[in-house]
Image (cartoon, rainbow, N blue to C red; front, side, top):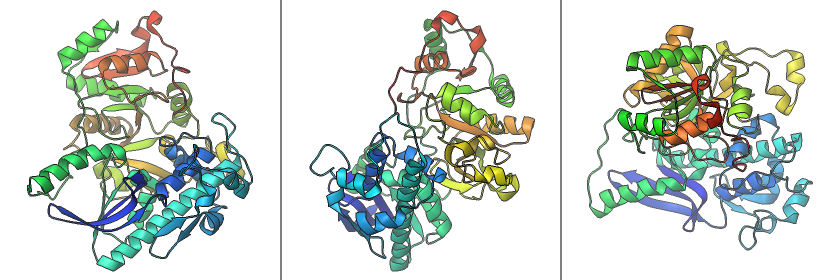
Amino acid sequence: MVLTADGVGEWATTSVAVGRGNALETLKEIHFPHSLGLLYSAFTYYTGFKVNSGEYKVMGLAPYGEPRFKDLILEKLMDVKEDGSFRLELEYFDYCTGLTMTNDKFADLFGEPVRGPEALLTPFHMDVAASVQAVTEEVMLRLTRSLAAETGMSNLCLAGGVALNCVANGEILRDGAFENIWIQPAAGDAGGSVGAALAAYHQHLEQPRHVNGALDAMRGSYLGPSYEQADIEARLSAAGAKFEILDDEALIAASADALAAEMAIGWFQGRMEFGPRALGNRSIIGDPRSPTMQKTLNLRVKYRESFRPFAPSVLRDDVSDWFELDDDSPYMLLVAGVKEERRREMTDDEEALFGIDKLNIVRSDIPAVTHIDYSARVQTVHEETNPRYHALISAFKQRTGCPVIVNTSFNVRGEPIVCSPEDAFRCFMGTDIEVLVVGNCFLRKEDQDPSLKLDYKDAFELD
């Protein structure tokens, strides 16, 4: 079963298809302007974030609030049937004929105007985010439950921008209507390039589809450019970087030592990831045990809102010891709870805190990757697809007993993920990252020429 849900692709916004062998047969569709993705984007706009890029901020903000507007959304903004099919009440939206996502009637319904981009985030905005997230999960669960009951199928593929909502994906997995779930890592519009190639190969050229029965055929989605060691050295030297060259064993050891010392590391290795998530080749990494790491990375490295959560990269063999998950999640597209025994019970005073005030409370043994609802966006790391990243986390585990590290994309807000060694060095010199590892080159911030330091804080607009 293949369920695709997004803003709009051609005219279909939600589609259901069956995949057998090398063929896909579309069974049913919901068409524009009725769209779950555009509903979410409307709330992204209303809460002051940028449409088509800020939706994941709404998802990250949702746990800080209460879904007190969920019933209002289901009553006034959309009509959802038991099987998950839906229609939107278009009188509240402006995206069909105007220049904004919502109109004055939408704002009047919720009682506040559209939030400005840099305006204070209040409990109201948190509750709005929680409400649209709850509605999205409700619709996706109704869809998947009805499709499983209707067809008896046990395998589900999710695609489209809505499939990047890893919180909803985690709910679908735990719901158990389907035994196996797979989500394409570039599930948004970028994935159309892979789809076009596969469609040509399987449908036009009628080539068979082979399944290896083990790891998925994208093998970690490391499809981007890579750089040979000699090229890396030449590029870094030309940029004025000071570095030492270490063999593989020494590089892993020095990097694991830096992580254990709570340093932020820019980690640049191999082929760049395809899709919106850094998966261990263009990543900023850190120690998840540090109670200050999340705030440090958000405010001093990424220059972005402090509430935004970071993902854990965890060795696949250890995932079920730390998280309420025992499935592959190589693309960081499933959210699961931190295991009860790893959690720290909050005091009554801490429980009484609201919203962002809860952020600095240590909630588990790995506070830097534990969101305020004890959830985490998990990436499982597999030796077969990324042996160097796997070796690094293994070395960190040897030193600390913790098989988890913080993983966030190697960039600052508003900037694309770094691609070339020069990009990596520039970002390194424009942030408070303390160590940079590019190939086998190891760079310390204190060794660099101070005149090369950049002010990245205001170099890019809000993402």
